[in-house]
Length: 434
Image: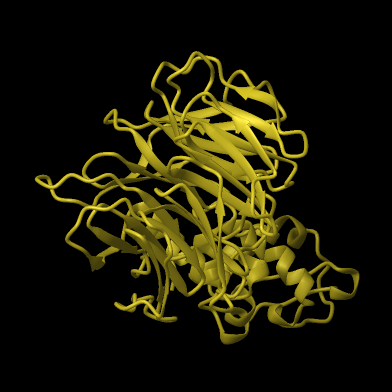
């Protein structure tokens, strides 16, 4: 079963499996065959794993998932080479939720890429283990944030921080930190590297330090703060009082107030920090999606022209400086490209059961996860397809609840419903990779 390499000093190598039934060697041989046929005979030989690593990576880059798995079973030396992230990056970019983004950035670089490709098959096939880590009796409007091994969950007027076990990912039942101070329920909150920033039904914004017990409030809205976003010291908030406000971490009053003439349900700051997007209730005669310049507090673009009345936008997510996803009451997920015409989205996916979509999350590549307004329905979508890829009903038929918030990790999906927190664990044993 030993391969031979001929004339390696000229970069021409010959790979000939001595066992014609060895599928692993045949996989590589099929890629190299055009070069092998023209190789001279009778030169110095060397083992295939002894080739320079950059040459091996070039060969392995041509193999598909099945062939790579076969090659890794040939010997320990090849298994060690095949297990490296550089070999799997091309394959991983075509799978769902592997952590490889549209521009090649690796989000989960601390997890071996081969392991992520294993789990990615389960995301595509809907293979997961369901659990309900937390339950509560009173119906709430919970919100989630996920920061590596810590899950943040708001319940009524408090935000709890829960540890996730590093290996099992099991949620610790009691929070190790609680952030409070609102006189009403917490409607939304966001995380930064140093702060937890929340907006409440009391119209206030609270800024909590994650490194100390210091917190302070920002007052300006006259009604509940439905949404907010924060990046690099900039805070944008939207309220039922029909205004959006621009703040900084160091200011006690808003830097600017923008009259929206409609209730504001969602906001998102662009990665460039130069603009932000607002989504309103669409109860007036103008588009619910508008882009605003941060410095001038002026509308610079209106997205879409065919929203029907009441088609409010409930969630907005930037995937890149020029692409964003939206969803809301009109049952559609829409992908907008700001480099193209703002009048029409570039892609859209419709919820098949005509339910409002409360929230969306994305792997920043091919996958979208959406939460519906009835029966705790979570759907997984592949942007390359028009139909829903997978469907999960988290609440029972006799107890209907919207999915208020979703969060993703490389192996788990967390969903917040009215009376419970659900988790889907996709780290089951796939059949394609060993």
